[in-house]
Image 1 (cartoon, helix red, strand yellow):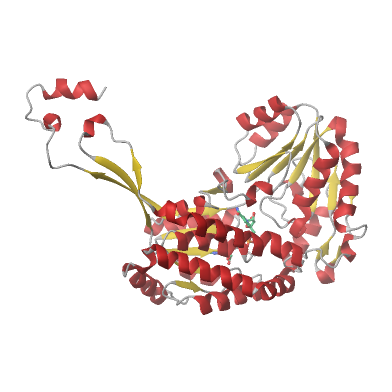
Image 2: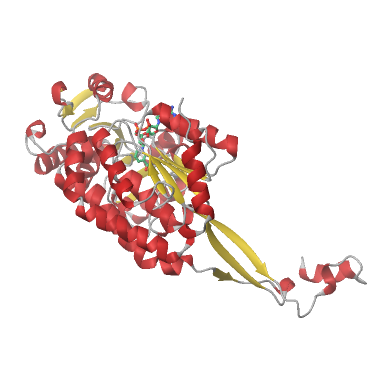
Length: 456
Ligand code: NAD
């Protein structure tokens, strides 16, 4: 197995020069990255088309444009973020002042998945640079054209002692994990997340784990059905369902099930055409292995919408399965494809109990006009993040830190959240030497009595 001692040592040495901590250095790096992305927009779109048949619209909105917005937001706000934060000082510390300094961890490892291969590598990088770190990025081997382009662009922009892209598969990832990094930011599946955390534990390296899981979507009896259908179809079938926060399965209230399915079929037609398999812009499944895994679910329950596939081009049309129970194979793991199983319910507590039987989801969606129902689910269901009356959209706000909880992940990022994730918060007390309050010393007369006036 190759070892990456050299690159980590180089980056560590560069980090210790202090250059990456200069605000002007960070801003310049972010600006260079932004310019390069703008200049290479066409190449990026072509790469995403080659790897996943992503349309230009999807490539721009979910990858390129998203990252440009993150960069713009970060560049605009970084000067205020880097300032030490002055906080209150208790009376027991009279004479002193208290500050929180954000300091970079050092050398960060960023491991990215294939489903948004550009965005999920670059969005964490923005946080790493903004916070003053060096970084090694390991992009996914399943999207080789995009990963190669990523390596080329980053290589042209930055010296490798600052930012390096190391392409490769599982072995490369494992070899990197043998090194001592100061931070590991991983996006990918739950089982690999466990491997990452185990490897990080050896060096006590802090981690962010952006994982996945089964994200529920509930349509309550009083929902705006037509709008719910459209917003769910969009969130589920964009990128052919290969989105970590796509609704994984639906819980439909029995009173609106038929109407919803009717509207859902119309919404699919409206968004992707009557024959989505003929739509030249419908995203393909990433690999034959994933295609076979997904098509094996097509005999679960009953196909209510869709169900057709084209094996040669790894395409599966938007598909809805009804007559599903929690025992069906499609309900065992995250689906990560354009297949949407439907469970029905008559009482919301059945739904909440069903969700409680399973790991905490990454995302959660409910469509209802009733604010007490909204509040009830917010109070009772733990999840990474989500929307009321929408799907997926919370992901793209720089003001909402994005991440999982429990099995769906540890930590969060986006906007200032990314800066905070890649910063250690160093608390510092600046004490006066003009006087010395005696109470804390053991030789003070009635010391304990006096201390008890303050510490009670
Ligand atoms: P994956 O876990 O298979 O791979 C992710 C990365 O880990 C890749 O770079 C891969 O090379 C590396 N890797 C794979 N096996 C490894 C091993 N044994 N040891 C070390 N490294 C290894 O995930 P994927 O298939 O690329 O992506 C799909 C998963 O990612 C889904 O579960 C999805 O929900 C999740 N995801 C989560 C988010 C999020 O933001 N929370 C975003 C996108 C995808």
